[in-house]
Length: 90
Image (tube, rainbow, N blue to C red; front, side):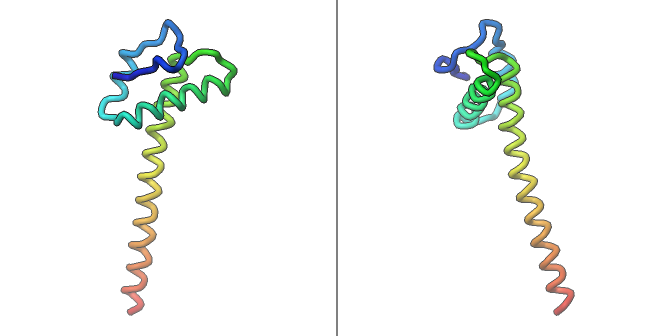
Protein backbone atom coordinates (compact mmCIF):
# COMPACT_ATOMS: atom_id res chain seq x y z
CA UNK A 1 0.00 0.00 0.00
CA UNK A 2 1.31 3.42 -0.95
CA UNK A 3 1.62 5.59 2.14
CA UNK A 4 1.57 9.31 1.55
CA UNK A 5 0.51 10.37 5.03
CA UNK A 6 3.75 12.31 5.56
CA UNK A 7 3.10 14.43 2.45
CA UNK A 8 0.10 16.78 2.27
CA UNK A 9 -2.10 15.61 -0.59
CA UNK A 10 -5.10 16.96 -2.46
CA UNK A 11 -8.47 15.50 -1.44
CA UNK A 12 -9.08 14.62 -5.09
CA UNK A 13 -6.00 12.37 -5.21
CA UNK A 14 -6.87 9.01 -6.77
CA UNK A 15 -4.64 6.56 -4.87
CA UNK A 16 -6.36 3.59 -6.55
CA UNK A 17 -5.08 4.83 -9.92
CA UNK A 18 -1.57 5.38 -8.56
CA UNK A 19 -1.63 1.92 -6.98
CA UNK A 20 -2.65 0.36 -10.29
CA UNK A 21 0.23 2.14 -12.04
CA UNK A 22 2.86 1.09 -9.51
CA UNK A 23 2.42 -2.67 -9.57
CA UNK A 24 5.71 -4.50 -9.10
CA UNK A 25 7.59 -1.50 -7.74
CA UNK A 26 9.62 -1.91 -4.56
CA UNK A 27 9.02 0.08 -1.40
CA UNK A 28 12.10 2.16 -2.17
CA UNK A 29 10.72 2.93 -5.65
CA UNK A 30 7.39 4.00 -4.17
CA UNK A 31 9.13 6.18 -1.61
CA UNK A 32 11.11 7.75 -4.43
CA UNK A 33 7.89 8.45 -6.36
CA UNK A 34 6.33 10.22 -3.37
CA UNK A 35 9.52 12.23 -2.76
CA UNK A 36 9.77 13.23 -6.42
CA UNK A 37 6.10 14.25 -6.41
CA UNK A 38 6.65 16.44 -3.34
CA UNK A 39 9.69 18.06 -4.97
CA UNK A 40 7.78 18.65 -8.20
CA UNK A 41 4.86 20.21 -6.29
CA UNK A 42 7.21 22.45 -4.30
CA UNK A 43 9.00 23.49 -7.49
CA UNK A 44 5.65 24.72 -8.80
CA UNK A 45 4.85 26.58 -5.55
CA UNK A 46 2.15 24.14 -4.44
CA UNK A 47 1.37 23.40 -0.81
CA UNK A 48 -0.09 19.97 -1.56
CA UNK A 49 0.72 17.06 -3.86
CA UNK A 50 -1.85 16.57 -6.59
CA UNK A 51 -2.55 13.72 -9.01
CA UNK A 52 -0.48 15.28 -11.79
CA UNK A 53 2.51 15.59 -9.43
CA UNK A 54 2.40 11.90 -8.58
CA UNK A 55 1.97 10.86 -12.20
CA UNK A 56 4.88 13.09 -13.26
CA UNK A 57 7.02 11.57 -10.51
CA UNK A 58 6.02 8.06 -11.52
CA UNK A 59 7.09 8.77 -15.10
CA UNK A 60 10.36 10.28 -13.90
CA UNK A 61 11.19 7.27 -11.71
CA UNK A 62 10.30 4.85 -14.49
CA UNK A 63 12.27 6.78 -17.11
CA UNK A 64 15.22 6.89 -14.75
CA UNK A 65 15.18 3.09 -14.70
CA UNK A 66 14.83 3.01 -18.47
CA UNK A 67 17.65 5.50 -18.87
CA UNK A 68 19.97 3.35 -16.71
CA UNK A 69 18.98 0.30 -18.74
CA UNK A 70 19.61 2.07 -22.06
CA UNK A 71 22.96 3.44 -20.88
CA UNK A 72 23.90 -0.08 -19.81
CA UNK A 73 22.92 -1.42 -23.24
CA UNK A 74 24.88 1.35 -24.98
CA UNK A 75 27.99 0.50 -22.99
CA UNK A 76 27.53 -3.19 -23.79
CA UNK A 77 27.23 -2.39 -27.50
CA UNK A 78 30.37 -0.25 -27.36
CA UNK A 79 32.23 -3.07 -25.63
CA UNK A 80 31.00 -5.56 -28.24
CA UNK A 81 32.11 -3.22 -31.03
CA UNK A 82 35.58 -2.81 -29.54
CA UNK A 83 35.84 -6.56 -28.99
CA UNK A 84 34.84 -7.13 -32.60
CA UNK A 85 37.50 -4.67 -33.82
CA UNK A 86 40.13 -6.30 -31.62
CA UNK A 87 39.22 -9.75 -32.96
CA UNK A 88 39.25 -8.48 -36.56
CA UNK A 89 42.70 -6.89 -36.14
CA UNK A 90 44.22 -10.01 -34.58
